[in-house]
Length: 138
Image (cartoon, rainbow, N blue to C red):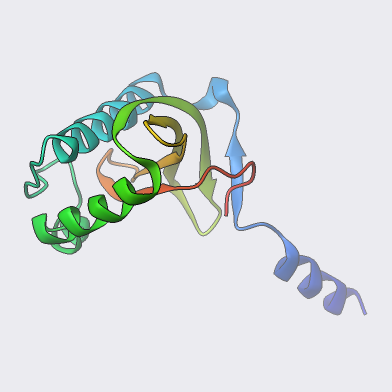
């Protein structure tokens, strides 16, 4: 019976855990905001360039200039023009505790979405999303 309860608890536990603000590295916080601003400002200006050494190999390969352009066209249709982003909070994925998920609150001309910047334990960009803001991480 105890094993069944433990398995049920394990399946229900959230895959993410919020990192207390005081435990978030200020340098990583600044990197997350700077990367989001640099990428989104370039897209706003019509520049879709290959990611450099700031990004992990896998993300560089998957977020090529053509995919960036297509992603931004969709983002622009929903949220309008990018204005700015500010850091809100950080989370960690329990299955990958070295990575930090930085949630930024963005301002666009037609909405205020979340910009999610994921940095690995080496500070490399491994994930980048713009999505509707939700109170919980999902």
